[in-house]
Image (cartoon, rainbow, N blue to C red):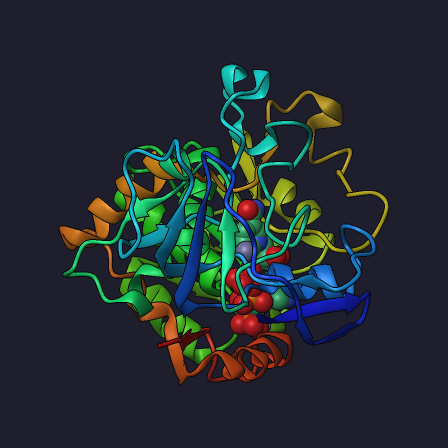
Length: 352
Ligand code: NDP
Ligand code: ZN
């Protein structure tokens, strides 16, 4: 079969590989809808998780099950499924500790491209199918559903980590697809004011749709000054970091109020240290929580998010600005994600 792969750091291309084989608990899936992620870009071009040779890329997919192992109970060939970006081994101590994302070691729930081939291929392998796949309802189109696998679970996790409460003031730094879903998640959790930080007009419009009340353009001066000005120098209750470089952690800590929470969902692809501003962190005593997390995956998380889409609590389809047809188009979609033209939020490839 063919797949679109990271050949080495900085280089991508099409390769031929053997079709994957299902173990007793696994499934083999063929893609129906695929999307590239900014994380794929960090992985390839910044070498953020180290070298990977001829490793198939991609971790956002809706697909059709073509084969299941002998122990799989709830799925059969022909089922249409949403595949989470994070597909942990569910029989580990980390799962019992409540951190399935780190099942088997830090970030090890992130398997596609990280420790095995990803989804940008004619077929891909899903471990522990009963625990990691979710059925796609007929009334959700694949191009919308593929936004659930990673964008929705990650953005919503930002709102969870930031502990958004009814009436909380929230700043979301970065309003690409991840930050936009963080705004939608914060809205659903009952946020009051939501300050969105970004510059692309297409993203600004969608940010307002999902509930942003104020827009801050980082190209118009220091974002800490702008947020402090908007809040009468009080700062916000919660900051969700979903874009920009390492400097955004410093900015987030400066703009959150004492006792507030900074939640990072960015994937920092470079730099050895993240900055913490000493004075604004109260010389270490400001009770400003700093948190960060990999998105939740697995079947239940997907099923819960599918319910939100199905009952129209949120429409992640608003993220999709470009739709292309045919597996070959994965390369074009991937390069769009790298180059980020001003009219792009998220491209989707439909495979028949
Ligand atoms: P995008 O590149 O599409 O969006 C980034 C956003 O950050 C844009 O709104 C951009 O503004 C803004 N931005 C850029 N520079 C600055 C700056 N200096 N100050 C403030 N804002 C800035 O990224 P995605 O939404 O696709 O992904 C966001 C991050 O989330 C990535 O690092 C990605 O790898 C990560 N990620 C993490 C996951 C997790 O599990 N934690 C899962 C999936 C993704 P502009 O409008 O100008 O473009
Ligand atoms: Zn991703």
